Length: 470
Ligand SMILES: [Ca+2]
Image (cartoon, rainbow, N blue to C red):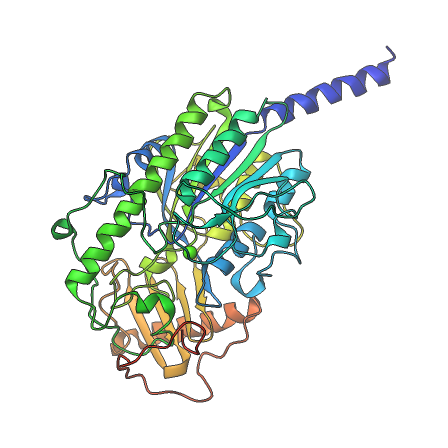
C-alpha cells in the first residue's frame, strides 16, 4: 500500500473508532412534572426509586427552567424550544422552519427514534426522527384510551390504534424494542416523551402505589386564590379545581399527581434495567427532564400558565460516561440548552439556527455556573427576569410588578415590590428585562396601552371548551 493510501486507511480507521465511541443518548421527557417531585432530591413523601437511581448516577439540576409559553398549551412551545434549541420568541411551533436537534444527531450518523407524546404536528416527525413508534399526537386524553400511531417508512403516520396499555407503558415498550434492536454499528438517540403526569391523573387500576391524602402536605405557598388577575385566571388548567381552592381538593389532586409520577418512575426503571443489561451500559447518556412544572395549589393556581418557580422549574438529571455520580448543581439553564449540551458531549454539530448555550462544563464540575440570568414570558401578560437570587415578575396588562428574594423566600410568598429600599433594584431589573426582550426579538410592551383592573373575582359560570377564555 502506498503511503497516501495507508494514511487514508489509517484516518478512516481512527474516524470509525471515534464514531464507535460516540455515546448513545436516551432522553426521557415527562409532561408537567414539577422539579420538587423526586424523593432523592428532597421530597419526603413521593416514591421514585428509579429516578433516585438516576440521581445517584449523575448530576441533578435544581435550577433548570422552561422559558415560558405563548399559549395555554405550554407543552407546544416548550417542546419546540427543546427540540430546536431556540428561545420562546424565536420558535417555530411546527418545527418545520429550522433543523431540529434530533435531525442533527441523525445527520451525524446516529440512529434516531421517538416514542410517546408529539405535540408539534405530524409533518415535523419525519423531519426530526428516522423511526417513531407509539406516537400520541393529540391533546389531553385518558391515557388508557388514547390513540397512538407509528411512523411508516413513507414518513406518514399509520392509522391510529388504541392499545390496551397505558400510553406511557406502550411508549416505554416501543423504546425497549428499539434499544433491543441496536447492534452497536451506529450510536443511537432515543427520545421517549411521556404523556404524564399531565392531568387526567389516570394510571392502571392495579398499580399498587397510593398516597394517603391526609399525609400530603399543602404547598408552602398555597393560597385559595391568586391575589390579582395574572391575565390567565380561567384557562383550562385553572378550571380543574373550583374557587376558592380548598385544602382538601389540592391535597387530593397532589396525591393522584404523585401516584402518576410513581407510575412513570416504574417505566423509567424498565428503561434503566434494559440499558444496564445491554452492551451499551457504559456508553449511554441518560437524561430525565420535563416540559414544565405546574402549580397544583401554589399561589392559588393549578396550571403552568404563570411564571412562578413551581411552574417554570423542571427536573433535569443527566448521567453517563464522564459525568460524575451523585452530584447536585445550582447552575441555571434553560431546557433549550440541554440538546446543545448533548450535542457537545456527542460530537454532533449544532443546527445553524440553534441558540441554546451548551453547559457541558457544569457536568464535569457541578459547582460551576451556566447562565448568569434567565428571562421568562407568558403571552403578553407576564414577563420575568432572575439572576438566581432576585426575581422580578411583571404583569403589563394590570401594571403590576412582583419582586422576590429567592434566597430567603424560595416559595415566592413575600412580594418586596412596595419596599422603597428595592426601588432602584426594580428599576434596574425592569430596564434589563426590556433590553433582553428586545435583543431576543420580543416586542411586547412592559406596560400595556390599556391597563385593566388588577382585582379578580372567580366567575360564576365558566367558559366552555372552544369559548373565549377557556
Ligand atoms: Ca406540558
